[in-house]
Image (cartoon, rainbow, N blue to C red; front, side):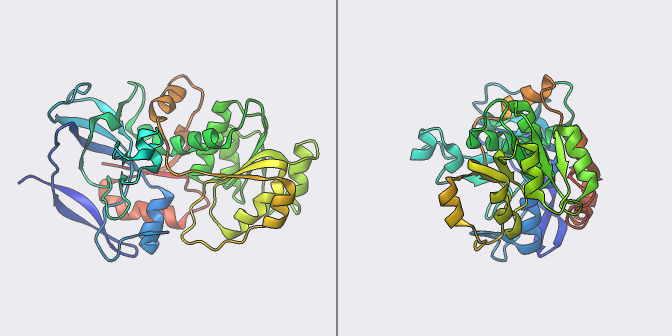
Length: 348
């Protein structure tokens, strides 16, 4: 039996390298040697709390990770598009393709979704993954494995654009300039948004937001009235669209004041539990629209085209790199350095 190494989460903030059986590709699958993996905010929730919403480890070991790229090293039966040596990005959710949601094209709502690194399913923080060929995408020659590992969060930003309904030249506010907030800004720029206002309390992240595509930035530590500042930037009305990328009770509430009457708010930031207050009386009177998103549909190949032709640039968002052996250090860095860490990538 061939084995591989894997980082296994055993308890809160306790991961260790263990030997696991190397997977064998089944019919329609390819075996991928993982090269790079991004550390996601959802990974951190499981790392610190062993749960997100209804998904919890229940004391069982778990391999984290779902943002990854790698090299195909073996091909299973009935694979038609892949060759050994192909450099690929993995779409990390396996839909059943049989339920009513999948048949309607909304496979992100699949009733029987297998999603990497979400209990009870293991993720990609291991040396090899067997994965359905149709959920792998060949990378452009000029794309690095590190950039490939950041495609998945960029796709989240693109799905947020699709869900929100934002149009060409519409203005927008993005609250929170972590990795997903930055990817949302990059997606807004690629989608042709007009004024893109980034709100965050860390100067380093606001500077990065300007490089990625924001036209304006606001630091609540330095601005006593964020609402008034946003209205000044938007002809006195407030933004047409807003995107919440933090997942805190305060930002979930405050963002309602950043949009004009009839505006649309898209919630992207993850919260561990329900219970955040919402100003529903004024929301109804002002005719606000709320959107959310869960995963994505049919956007990985489009994301790569946007990057290939320079419509977006996410490479600057990789602020730190670690080796596979430093996997636990990578998680602690992401957890403890919110000021300077945006996207942390682990290289295998």
